[in-house]
Length: 392
Image 1 (spheres, rainbow, N blue to C red):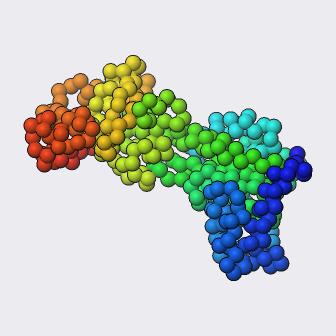
Image 2 (cartoon, rainbow, N blue to C red):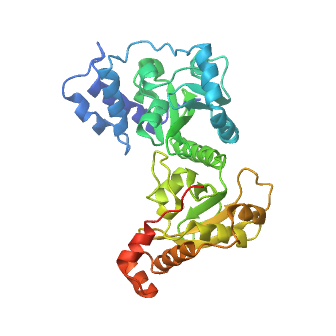
Image 3 (spheres, rainbow, N blue to C red):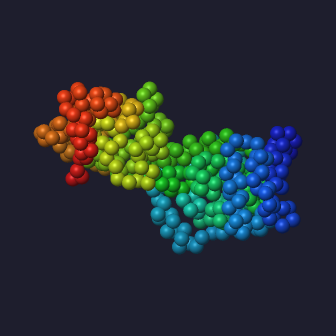
């Protein structure tokens, strides 16, 4: 039950109301001149400026706080098309949704999964079927985007691209001021946002810690999506001493030629060379060593898995664990290595290229030092480093 006598809870609600008064005219719901710039001063928690930005967008679109929210459902055809398009997201999210249900079982919060446009594709948890306010949003096909229901954790997570917490009157519309929700975006293996995960309660106690919970769950979904990407080599990476095969590791998927097929957000934060839009990249553009050495490390490791420290082109080093797998993973590592030609005769130019990359790696990215060690000019080193393995 929502506490009516909690002084801190009452203070929060009063702060929210003062912020609304600073932005909206109570009679007409209009933005008062100059007040919107001062509203953030009433939001006492750090990082809540995005609420003001969302309110500003809603007002600019002609929305008003006193207007009623219909919680529109998209057409049945659109629902079927969306569910078909999101089948990988739904599969990857199912364990995370079940885990959220267990974690929030006694809190009257429930989980919502949307696609990248804010349309609900799955719901999990204890939804009170007798409360129309809960049923209104806990339906597959409901459009919960900002253009439809105004400011919410769902729309904010999709637009701000980060985990957020929203309580009661921080929502734009009065019709949604009974909800409290935490939301986090879900990113796909090519770097784009593919959906959003949300925890919502109706007239519940404020629990901002749910932002951390939903962010962790969203990260688990991202990892599951990345692991479903077709690949021959899975590279787990983290800073030295922090690689633990956990959900915080970077995941990088490479095909048999060393080209990137997918990566999670942790990998994109660690390796700056990873493009956010999924552009085709080769491993040699990310690591200052040839991809052959990653495959070799995986082949030498136990059960096709090897761990080593790898230099980045920035001069930083990361710890990686390389594992040969992917489609056809029932074949052993040695068999997959034979497919790639590992262990067969290697052309002389490839050996020379590997020696250059290794020298640069040993020199921690210092090209001049690597050139002296090899007895060649820096220009030659740079020329060979620009060489990429061709796609077969």
